[in-house]
Image (cartoon, rainbow, N blue to C red; front, side, top):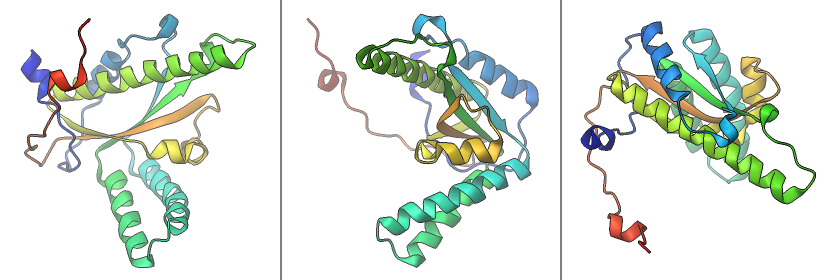
Length: 197
């Protein structure tokens, strides 16, 4: 079991094969079994399988991306390259999942300290669902990669996909059947990241 968990890798290249809806349903359902603060389950999932939805998202996100890259002082050649790569990743991925956070059922406090802590708990809960989603995809023989583009353009994602206003985009996953053999990646040794007391 530990070996299975350790063999999950980030995959960015997929076959053109579609993913059965039952498989997607199992993946999402498993993701909802993640632990969450107060058991409020603040995760929400926008699952993009239709080319039109992916194209609309890629076009609108590319405008924001272009603005950010220009501010960074990047050359027009490099900007075009990065935008085209970003668009192709979205459009060529069999499935794109936008992981969102909905704070509407979280506790509300009158002070900033507890409000910030409550938001952090919700973010942690949503992140746990994201990891479980990737492990569920791995269990189905699918590859996936976690990207953070929605954090830079949340309003654009909401607008492009007509999401509820309470859904705050946090991450974007690409899912598909891998064309890659994932490489071994160096991991920090346990003794570098743990302190037993």
